[in-house]
Image (cartoon, rainbow, N blue to C red; front, side, top):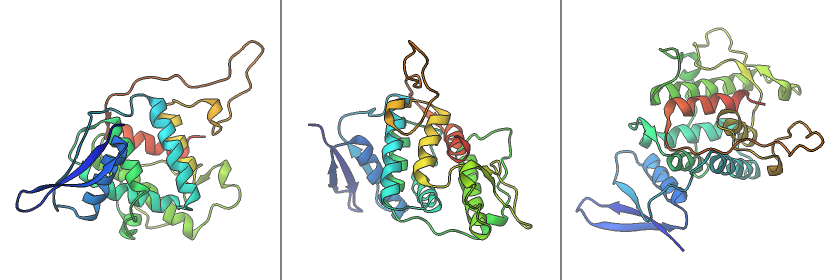
Length: 249
């Protein structure tokens, strides 16, 4: 059985093992938690068999589906999850492209660390995208902070029992411009995460039990999404994943 070690170097240059993991994604997630809790601290890295563990859109879909189930069992709010996600993303912010393992690790780390505090200034801040579409880390950050500002606005003006059919964020007077559409359909981490991948990358299967496709006709096979390889992802891709988490049905 393969193992992946989280390694650390102290100020004297001595290298030591912090923890061992049976999953590369789990080890990478632990590094993000450690670095998110102590930015600019000791360097951490992972040693073990080279990746990738996440090779296809289906791999990522199943990973997100599992994380959503864990978040539901732990009664996480979507705001708390996104604030934790924003916090653990910082160590990766200098990269233009991410491996799918890094993406899976970032979302795993978000479920394993206390969330950052909500900053009330986000509600009034201009978070609109400067270009035609999301590109780098700063644009992904604008998307996530826009969603957090919307969720905070919903606390003051709850969407009510019909929210599952869709609701527009209230965005009261004084709210800043935001990078995301006002329409919301998913208000908890489980549905947000499932819809995030299903809407942007696919990879789902009716047998997973999370998505109900149209009934198959006579002689037809049950609906599923095509499986395809994924090699690298950009922050623009992650911004689109986030918007699908908010709006996809």
